[in-house]
Structure formats: C-alpha cells, structure tokens
Amino acid sequence: MKLSLILCCALVIVAGAFSQEATKRNYVPNSETAVAIAEAVLIPVYGKKDIESERPYKATLKADVWTVAGTLHCADGKFQSETHPSCVGGTAVVEISKLDAHIISMTHHK
Image (cartoon, rainbow, N blue to C red):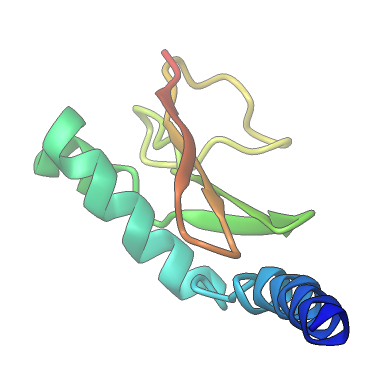
C-alpha cells in the first residue's frame, strides 16, 4: 500500500513537471502574427484610421516578447529615421508574449 502511494505521488510530480513544459507554447511564432495581434487590439482603442496610418508596423523579438511599433510619418511625407529625426508625434507600441499571446502592455506615444 505504501509503495502504491509513493508511486502515485511520484507520478503526479513527474506529470506536473511535464505539464509545465507543455504549457510553453509558441502562439506568436513570427512577426506577421505579432503585427496582426497588435493591430487587432489597437484598433478598438485608438481607431482604425489612426492605427492604419501608422503602417508599416515593425515587430522585434527579445526574450520571448514581441514589441510591435508603428511608423511615424512626417508632414513632408518621409518616415522618421536617424537621418530624418525631426518629426513631431508618436506611434503605438504593443508588447506581446510569444509563448501565450497575452498582451503585456499597450501604449501610444505622443
């Protein structure tokens, strides 16, 4: 009886360890998916017109977190860049977990 109880406890511990590994998924496997998720959560908050005006969005991955940021378009029709830094305004930024797709943060800079 004691042996059965010990074996059951060991089985539960081993199963628990494996199930924790199994929950580490890859729900956001690439930048295209990250951008699609970001736009989907941004549009209801900031409006379709504003969010679409910040395209293209750029997604970067660091430590299983996707950071998706919009592009700031300058009044002269150029994009803000290191060579053209004088635009006024900001863009949306969303952080998304690669593992389970939850939204870590969502902001819009001015």
